[in-house]
Image 1 (cartoon, helix red, strand yellow):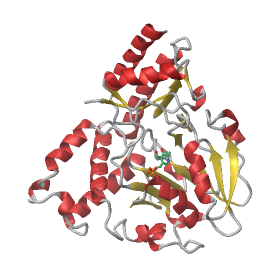
Image 2 (cartoon, protein in one colour; image 1 turned 120 degrees about the vertical axis):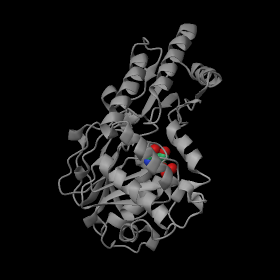
Image 3 (tube, rainbow, N blue to C red; image 1 turned 90 degrees about the horizontal axis):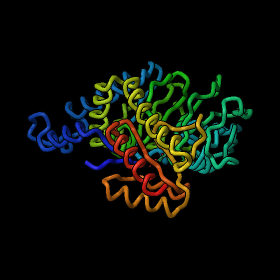
Image 4 (tube, rainbow, N blue to C red; image 1 turned 90 degrees about the vertical axis):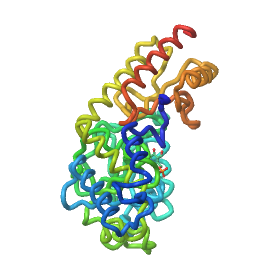
Length: 359
Ligand code: PLP
């Protein structure tokens, strides 16, 4: 297997891939693939319900919240959130933390007024604004945060207390990387393709009182209420992605749940950041220390030439996906839940060796 450090779609647990392979043609002796079955049949519905129940269990999602499986990726949520939650005379407020927050803000502007509660743009988004920098504008319908900025490699260590104003979070690149207090949030959304499964399904966790009738005209498929009323079976669901997500959730449970994967994630992140910090400025972390992500580790070398060399040589050694996003440059190692510690160890050994040869 390659050492997969892709930012998304990302590594899946090997056990999950093997299980899916075994079950693919003849699902539980049914004589059919699950992919050939009706989404209204008992077998598929069992998988669908199990995935929801596991997500509820692993994230401790209280009653009073709906869990939805929708399509269109997190990018569609950039529009669905304001379409469903923004009322006339109110603002969609944001913490501007980087590339993905910016996309969410741009999209919300299509539907109403937006406001910035705090921003780290002046620091090239190399940090998450501190909690006391965040001032929620008056008349905010909600405050939107990007829990983990996949491109810059920054992550909220704690979330702001927004009182009666719903906190909305894009958790596409860090959902289920650590335990979470769901009651802090009004709505959470995440594309599955980093920590939860393959692309094709987007998870929405939303407080029931926020999914009443939207105040603007919203197409049926883009209303949360449509999916909530129909247990995410209003139309044909992305059954393969939900099936795979269910397998990944079982895997997470076997790792000790959210606390178990957090422990492993911190070990991987600590190892990588230590290698960067102890390199005597040969490797330079992009994110400020207190904003560092345990999912996406971004770093630079002394020159772009050296960075290119690093990417090329790492690829020859079986490492995949280490080139940074074109908007930030440099290097990025995405170490989502399914990336094994052994891959990170191999990477740090490669980094030490590369430094020896080029330092
Ligand atoms: N938000 C974050 C934080 C992301 O990392 C991504 C994708 O990488 C997106 C949103 C967009 O997700 P999608 O491709 O599912 O629309």
